[in-house]
Amino acid sequence: MENQYALMAMGFVNALSPMSIVIMIASVTMGIIIGCMPGLSAAMGVALLLPLTFGMEPSAGLIMLGGIYCGAIFGGSISAILIHTPGTPASAATALDGYAMTLKGKAGKALATACIASFWGGLLSCISLYFFAPPLAKLAMEFGSPEYFWLSLFGLTIIAGINTDSMILGLMSGAFGLVLSTIGMDPMQGVERFMFGQDSLYNGINITCALIGLFSMSQAFILAEKAIVKRAKAAKFSDRIMLSLQEMKRITPTVLRSWIIGNIIGILPGAGASIACFLGYNEAKRFSKHPEEFGHGSIEGVAGSEAANNAVTGGSLIPTLTLGIPGESVTAVLMGGLIIHGLQPGPELFTKYAPMTYTFFGGFVVIQFFMLIIGLIGCRLFAKIARVSDAILIPSIFVLCVVGSFAINNSAFDVKVMFVFGIIGYLMRKCNMNTAAVVLALILGPLGEKGLRRSLSLSGGDTSILLSTNICKILLALCLLSLLSPFVMKFFKKEKKADEAVLAEEDKEIDEASKKNEMK
Image 1 (cartoon, rainbow, N blue to C red):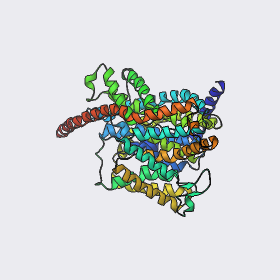
Image 2 (image 1 turned 90 degrees about the vertical axis):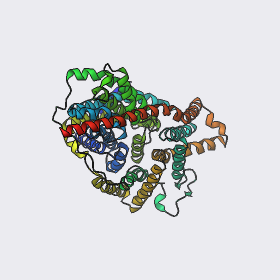
Image 3 (image 1 turned 90 degrees about the horizontal axis):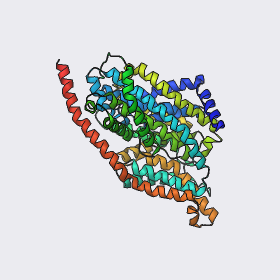
Image 4 (image 1 turned 60 degrees about the vertical axis):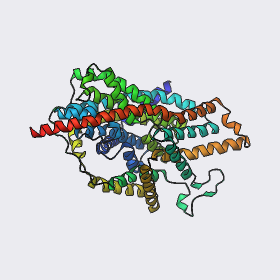
């Protein structure tokens, strides 16, 4: 325990180095800019900027990706509040009361509430990251080849089953990713598999190219096929971006409640921040002393949504770092970044690479403070960025995708792979299939294949080795439960759809109020 506290202290010292501070400021700012532009997402931002981390130390690279992640989740609230268009799906519930406050001339107060609630939600989630991750990592040290096979299968069934409206389509997405993961040299026998004479595929498909194509280039294609969208003019505001002590006391219970909700949702693989924001909003309304204010400009509604979606960030990193099971699509991209830096999620991150891991943890804490400062100071500037039209956004994404893919190995072949995955991602989105499941299968597929084949090799082909330990049996049970989980998640999605229906009704009321204000 003393050694763990020493690692925590050393991690904070390393995270406060001048270079790390510069990286945090830059990454949080980039994340907020990405988040406040409707049409982009946190996963897309992390995938686009992942190539920038290749020349960095692993801890610095992870800190940068963490800053983009946290900044983008908060940034979505800026456009939700000012132009009634959530920058990311995680801020959909924020628009319910945030824009209503803007119409009342309280945009500054709404932005302050979102920023402060995001800060506390993210900061408190670091507590669970510090104290839950090491015990889980110790448990992972008991894993052998059979356990890793079941673990990879569990990860695939979870994210494939939950993150789509159809479990069949989700499992098909995962199976497609598994097929793609077999491209390259056989890990056991060293023979070529599905390389089609391309030596560049010797090590399999480049995960970064796949990430950029599936998340970023596919989004550019989707934006390009529609009419060019010019964003609504962001509301001008002159009120102070600050909360009074009384208002802080009022939102405190809501923030604490949403922190717990967001953390639990984050730890559960596949649920994500978009579900957490609606659950946080619902519970804020349920426990509020003034429920009649919700939908008409309640700071508790804004705080409930924003604290919950930012609490997901720390929670989702726990299964990602300890077991290699991403909590959502953003952490799937982060996990790809780990592997690119030569780090395999699991016990080694807390033993062999413990200094690097705790430096990232320390940086993740400090990132929350920079997010608060940059958010409060820069909200007026970010409000203008939220107006960027698709005419600028589409070519910018296109250029970043091409440059980022080429920069990996200075290879035109990687750019071709990225374009292929961009087309695949576009078609998958059109068919309502799950691109995150493909990425996860590319990452977990080789791990599961090695676990299965080594287990059968050790046992002489006896399949009973796959159920030889209690951990194997528990993981098998979890796999079966994960296949049933979509039916449980339907309950949460029904609540989310109900809130979206309320949002649609309030849109009409807000539009009418806006027209009246313009007439005046």
